[in-house]
Image (cartoon, rainbow, N blue to C red; front, side, top):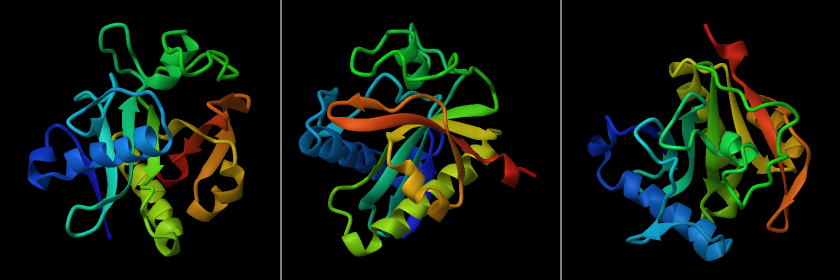
Length: 196
């Protein structure tokens, strides 16, 4: 099992890994979860998959994607869009309620957004916990390398059950909301204790 953080600068070094990650996202979010999201050539994508973002991928040696995540700076701007949580709060996204945060969405060099976090639907049950832990650890490593002390993310509201297992301090940043029949909540993942 390997972890790789992709960017537009390095993705050419990893063959089909970026495309495989977008295919895995489509399989989970569009095929399995039945979310109405953009897709092309068997890949799921949206307006936040830009050169400003990074993608953390857990994969095997053959490039089969087991899990993934997108990191976007909260300072990003592309047309009218910034980052998903902030844009939802600003009423730009009709699929996520605008009351998802207690306070105004941050815009800071030290805060990034973690979005599209997933473990592939076909990842074997006996390694899912390990895959998830590797994904969170690499999100922390990549975030710190990018200068971030924390990441905001919209997660299933059961996060308190597993947060301790992955060794990251998490804090609720908004209320629990029902989105497409699933209880979700914006959470801040604190990576500052490991910053040197």
